[in-house]
Length: 289
Length: 343
Image 1: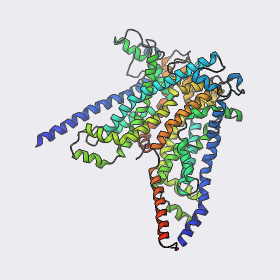
Image 2: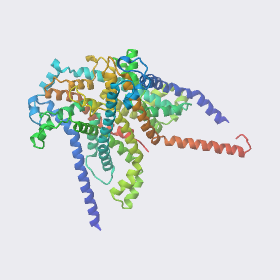
Image 3: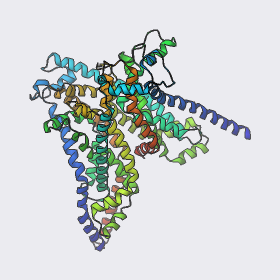
Image 4: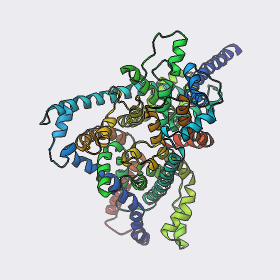
């Protein structure tokens, strides 16, 4: 009797091993480009073009210094980080707060237009950004708001996917009796939202804040569309990388890799610190039957 | 009727707060998104470049879709570019979606299979999702340097010195090489995301079905084909449609994965086409062409979106509504049965 069982578990073990190897290969495909990037950021131009290496060099400081000080590169990570941070923080705070507000309104109050409002939000979730961008830019230029961060931050108050997520969360884990109890205790409606609902929505808010921040930090399309005159002090990090990449005059790979590494490494570190949260958050955002 | 009256009072005094809570969203939405959308439709019937104020009816659509109209040679040139970008978008999307869904589905099934013991699942998930959070601009720049076309590019260098190729491969300017690279980069960036979405879908399936199949002695291949796939169909369809809408908007990588400031017309997507015409010709933008292309994109999206919306509708709410209606009917019937007496 023990023979088939052993066979079975051996087969399972072999299968697990094969799958494990496949996973290792995919992991390498994910990691090797980033690893080579970091290695090359530490090497000299001559070394980089002569051979590929997996061992770090000793030229990192020189590369970074050249990147920051040589006027040819037009690269200032502090300006890029600062502008990206202003846009990302501003839009994250606004989008998460107002989405929570909207979702709360949709879940707690039984008003006449509740159904249509929710249907509307679901429907507009599908409208691609590109479709509105022509009219958006023309409108912003007319208002004199191009070349400012306002059209990049304020519109995030209306973020249909975040509202959708928050509504799902409230529906599944927010007891409406609490609102009732707060009313009896004489708590105003908005105060109930601020002091009771927001703390209870913390997990959903954390997940959505992380995603909103990453999305806005990485956004290339909208800033490069709205910032029409491309003033150097307004450039965001992705725009700066694009400028570095498009600069035909650069003939020093070490410096280019150092620039790309400067933009990637902080993101990767923050990701690794928050990875549990993020991976779970993606799963939460998936479709539920 | 005391309880009903109470209910009435409550709904009268509090329902209006709902409007206050959702008001900021709708105000901002209308101002910054709905009006721009309408504005795009308006701009699509106006001229281009220096004739931006001129009303030309459906001229832009004619030019884009058929290359006819009274714009002469511009029209046929625009028509050709537009068709090419539509084709490119489709090719690149298919080429990245098919391998992506296969890899993601396999991984999702392996990671959720309780019988298999793959060590380091958590680590794999974290690493495989990582490319998705890296700025697309940096990803494009990274791959551009790794796959540089001269013999000094690391990958070409490696292949040359290993004797696999004789001349450097044109990874950036070659027609199919560059398309292949963009497909690969898109797949690289998104397979982890798709995998996690599918995993959450599989974990949401009823586990007793899998147990029953195990007890009946089904092989893992049978379980996958006969249980997982059919049950996963709505989720797969949803993934496909959202990915397709995302694919229609594909911009960052195709826009930036080009040599220096050159453009590669074999990887140019519709989104890049739109951007080039309204943004890069800035002193005299071609709002008309961009807007018309956007409207076409919008119509395609509506078609795809309505499919998703149908799949993803809130079943609880519909069931509740039905129940409420049935209750009302029952109540009315009861009242009738009691001769219209008040209860």
